[in-house]
Length: 246
Image 1 (cartoon, rainbow, N blue to C red):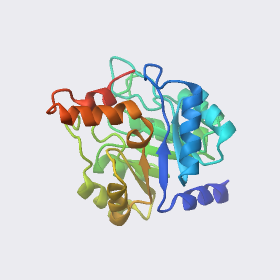
Image 2: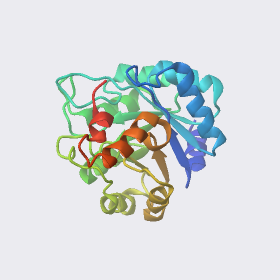
Image 3: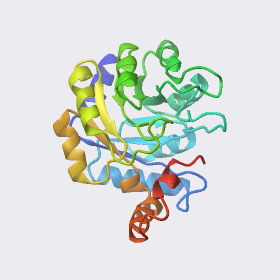
C-alpha cells in the first residue's frame, strides 16, 4: 500500500487536479453532470480529481480512472466545519472508492464540540492505508497537520474561516512559506482561489507539488456570477454564493 500511495503522489507532481462537485441546489445538479465533468478533466490532462459525497465519488470512479481526493460536505448551523467532519463520514468516503480523504484540519470547533484537527490522528488509526489531505487556513494549522502525520496539506479553507472570510485572493507569500518549511515532510498542494493557468503556474514555481482548481473550471454558474459581479460594479458578491451552506 505504501508503494501504491507513493505512486499516486508521484503522479500528481506538477499537475492539475480538478475538483468536480455539484450540490443539490446548483442549477447544473445531476449525477450525470458530475461524471461528465470528471471525464472532461481526464480528457484535458488532469492528473487527479477531487469530489464530494459518497454517491458522486462512486459514480465518478465507475467511469474515470484517475486518483480521487474524496470528501463529504456536511453543514450544521452551529459550526463552519463542513469538510468530512466525522470519522464516519471519512470512512464512507474511503469505502466509496477515494484513494485520498480530505478533512478539515483547522482549529475550528465541530458540531460535536471538538477542534476539527483532532480527527486526523483518529483517521490515521482507523484507516492507516489511506492518504489524508489536510485542509487548513493558515501557516500554524499547516505546521500542526504536518506534525500530526498528514500526507498532503493545502490552504483549501483560507477564506472560509472566521478570521479569513474577507479574503478573495490566495496568500501566495504564506503558501510559499509553507512549501519551504514543510515541503520535504508532506506534499504541499495549492487549493483555493486559483482562477487562471498563470496563477496555477505561479503556485508550482513557489513550491506546490500540484494545484487543485474547481470553481474556475467546473462550476459554470459561479464562473458567470464572477463576470456579472464585476460588470455590475461589485454590487452582488459572487463569493457569498461560493461560500454558502447548502
